[in-house]
Image (cartoon, helix red, strand yellow):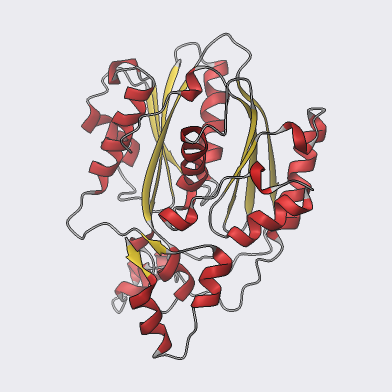
Length: 326
């Protein structure tokens, strides 16, 4: 784990203070893979642990989705590549998808919807991958100090029971198109230019972008999801948000008139892991016994630009299976 002592010294020399910012965001460090660490090895390890927890083998898989905004390849898809690595020969469809930091929740929702209408798709593997170290630069202290590398995987199975996804809710506003632009100058400028620099492939620097709107957006979205299902905020045992900002999460919980026991935060342990982060929070909540069978939970994530996704889920017996050696 990269702690902030060295980073703080680096930015202090540039008259940039990060200590108070990191406190607001609730971050104590970030995880960065080594330069020689293989992208797909991370995906393979995570996938096999998810299969083990679900008591399944690769031969049981019908669908593979890689949800990522930091792909290793554009073609062939990363989903096809990991399917080949796993030797999952019965997979019928494999594809990548991207909704930025909402990708994990959107992918789970898409897979579930697909499975409901397709008789041949009964088991799906959804892999969320965020490689923050591939895209950050020191010129952007927020991303450089918070973005981690992480992979999370979940298994969806088609079963006749009352648990699983109950409903989803989405909100989109295209007014924030300068939010986390990647690559900074777009592919056309990079691929057609003879003078492109490595930094052009990295994350753009946000110029005073105000994201203080997020707690209010989440409150409106969550209240709508709850109302559509005749629920109130207290009926939900855990709210599992994108883990970018502890302040945003706490503010949302306060706006919902809930106590701190209703959310799980893991950003201080893992840094910010993008689309993986609500799944990491779910893992932590299950491991600590915050979630039990028949509980209602909500996963909520927001992607740059923005699209925000919220999912209402009823916990089943199989959902409590976790692989301990994460």
